Image 1 (spheres, rainbow, N blue to C red):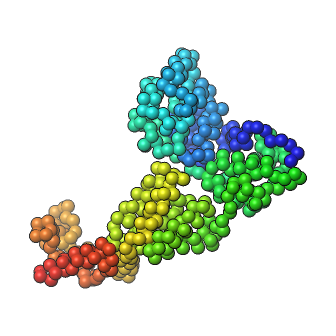
Image 2 (image 1 turned 90 degrees about the vertical axis):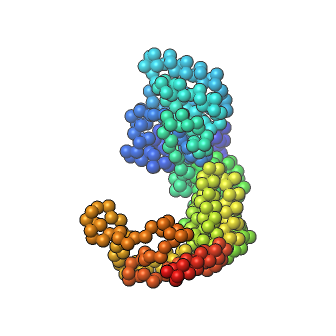
Length: 431
């Protein structure tokens, strides 16, 4: 390589200086969006940037610092305590006397303990400082309620693969701060691999492409897939999230769980995670499966799948893989029944075939005198007035009064459901 790379990491050198250079977060920074307007008008309010590493939290703080006429202070939870916080507020009072606002950026705000967070409150309440916090953790659990209520929480998303690819291309071609002076290119498959492997983290993508550039042999100016794999110490799996293999692998995972094979379920789950699949996509599919393939055979399956989604959102990766593994194995070994799934489809088919049949008069509501005169609600029997809180009466429209939609199979908890349904039928037969 002809030119030595500067010592400052590439991700830091090309940190966006303004909104025009920023990649991603269109839901916050698109035309007319609140955060963009606040920055452009220099009317920033107290807020917390919540998002995964490398999504732009600190970069947005730098952009605010460059755009504002306020006194902007960067403050790290790792480097300071209550004493330093009070000193900042003393300086803020001096600035306020000269009609200069103070904006305090608190990096990794989740690392502050309760006493440190409490120290922010008086200055924030008085409007002495505008606070901007950054955190990778859920603020609901990591930021004290009084401070949280005074801040607007903005959720930042991982960068899309296309955005990461554009950012890497910019880094390779920019001669002022990037690698443009080295005249390095990158193959399409290497760029695609990096964009997937970075999992939405711009810092990881930029630092990896910089390392790949450093590892290039003499007189080689193109980064290949093999060289990118070497830089990442990770092999590309045959898995295109937009192509056939994506659907093949998720299909294999679903069928393994449905077929009650926990080992196969874990293998296909690992394949997806290792290839960079979005864990939330996998969790959403497991929630669907919990109702479609397990249903009332084990009603806890849906609860566990939903809890797994919430749990993963709290902790993220890499620990989140444990939650995914627990959910996948539980669903795989759970008893299976698609009776609820078939039941709702049977009911939908009946509705589409028969149309909007009239509701029987006795189960209609009668809030007005006229409705009562029309026979609404007449003859309705309140179930709790009867033994076992059950009374036989018609609930379906006349045309479908004997129709059955739900037919449990008797697996797992459905054995008890069948017993309950038979008990109800016996009471019905006895009148």
